[in-house]
Length: 95
Image (cartoon, rainbow, N blue to C red; front, side, top):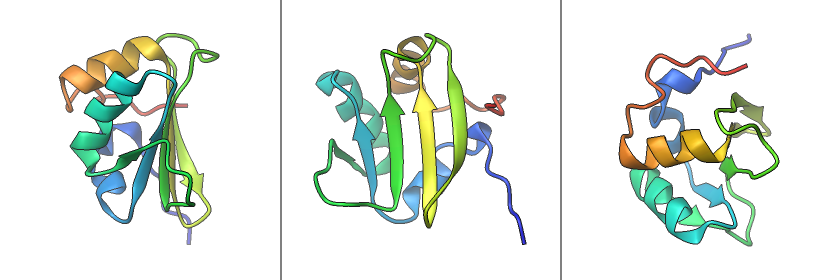
């Protein structure tokens, strides 16, 4: 059975299991990690990942199943909006 995940469900999928927010922008990552009760740049494998990347377009949003969890890729502009407002992805479906 295939169950899709959508960015608009944030933060719900990331509240199940441990989540690591991966970013070189530590303060931004801490804000997002706080929303999902996660950690920043975990060295140990976790269930879910949120990756804030400079290599992505500023408004890039992509969510997908990853291993037994979920991975969310965010560009820096959308990550800043999400840090300020946890409902910023409410009507986004990602790609």
